[in-house]
Amino acid sequence: MASKVRLYVDQPLGKGQTVSLTKEQAHYLFGVMRLGAGAVLSLFDGQNGEWDAEVAEAGKKGGSLLCTEQTRPLQMPPDLWLLFAPIKKERTDFIVEKAVELGAGRIVPVQTEFTNSGRVKQDRLQAHAIEAAEQCGGTFVPEVAEMERLGRLLDTWPEGRRLMFCDETMLGAATALAGEARGPWAILIGPEGGFSEAERARLKALPYALPFSLGPRILRADTAAVAALTLWQSALGDWA
Amino acid sequence: MASKVRLYVDQPLGKGQTVSLTKEQAHYLFGVMRLGAGAVLSLFDGQNGEWDAEVAEAGKKGGSLLCTEQTRPLQMPPDLWLLFAPIKKERTDFIVEKAVELGAGRIVPVQTEFTNSGRVKQDRLQAHAIEAAEQCGGTFVPEVAEMERLGRLLDTWPEGRRLMFCDETMLGAATALAGEARGPWAILIGPEGGFSEAERARLKALPYALPFSLGPRILRADTAAVAALTLWQSALGDWA
Image 1: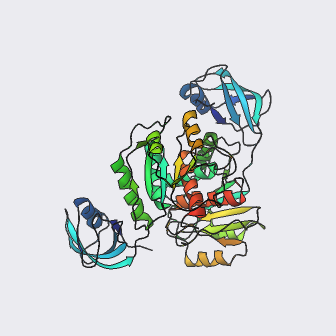
Image 2: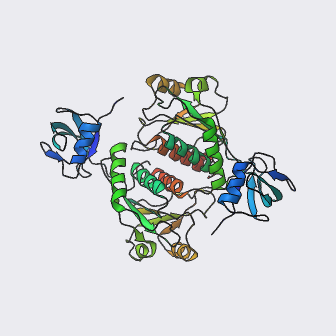
Image 3: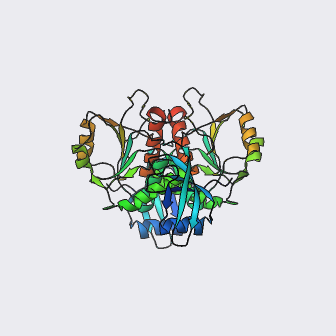
């Protein structure tokens, strides 16, 4: 059942292309995964699909790969953003991992009035997104944006993008998405304390926004993120 | 935004009932949450709904509560079992937590041919389920069963219970559940290595089983569990 090692590389892939490895990548491939010269692995760069590559040179501090054949074309996820109010570190990591697996196109940590976590490390979350894409067989890596304030995000909201929002105070039957139009969407998951009154009023008044319920029990923010992504994908996304 | 402390107790609740606390419960209520005599909290016993209770006596090693008013009736989740092949400890804990939040009625760790984790501690997982119920506002705590072999489970399968099963090798559009009959169901999430050929053949041949896909990307087992519970609840459960 051993499957090929998959590695994301930050350079354009193509037939005959040589890929130079960083120290960390060399350590992973040759130290951890024990690949030697001639071994075949899978590469993707987020833009040119998935490629077979052979280990040309394996060193302790570096090495190189030779890109041979494209094995899969680029598969873009739907144009879906996941906006979420960061929570505890472990659960924030989890949300990013799940968003990649479930096919979000862009991930945006959002600062709301009741968001506890003052800051998130964008680069750490981006690395997490890359790892999740390596793991789940994706050929695309969603961008993790820098944290933005909810108010600013709404001030500059792109025309034509719908927004479904949910927080823990919204209990009831799950909202049906089946009748909604496809196209660019965003999901906004509120913080564990819920949105403030002012935030909720503003969200409810937006013509492009859809308040969304996720059943009769209170869900943690990470559960809500996975559930909302699932319902969206199965009704309007690439699971449909 | 401070909400009432919620505590599960393992004794039947009713008006005027006195509840004796264990040392752990007393430590939690009086040490960690800093409740004193007269403070009001929420109790549930998994059978008689949710009750307000007052602290009658607060001690370092014990104490007692007086049950005053029922605040909510028992709300049973739908008759849905979650069967899953245990994975790494942290992700197994996560599956149990999410199953409770998402309203599974019973949780069964399953030993398949490719299940890595040899054993799970049933009591630890049950404690985890209780904590999740306290957190999510549930009035019911699903039983976490002892680990069972998949073959034995299927040998003794209850009549009339449908089974949807998914593993990481089943990619494609999400299976539509909307046309399926309500009633007792189970969801079976395969191990990260997938089911064996023999297991998959047996599952596919069962008249009550429904092979199930969760989209075009490979999902980790914990993601698959949350996604499958979400789709089931929104089509056939108490989110519908």
